Length: 77
Image 1 (tube, rainbow, N blue to C red):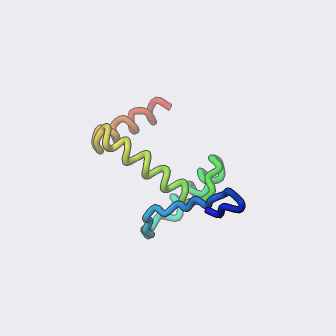
Image 2 (cartoon, one colour):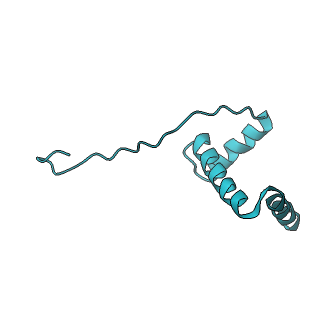
Image 3 (tube, one colour):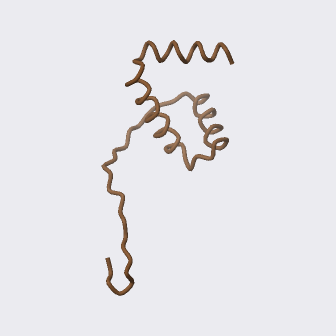
């Protein structure tokens, strides 16, 4: 913080690591469509948000129940 300007700089110093993932070309095509359609800044932003949401849902429902919920919901749509 500088006393003359009465301002400060805030740094986001979260620990991050790079994770490489191989995806089918068709999945990447769909990923890119979703990134554009829903105004994500990047593939990485989409993937981070998707993983965060999926982890939260897994903690609530568990893998098997969550899969059933999603599959049943998709049949209705």
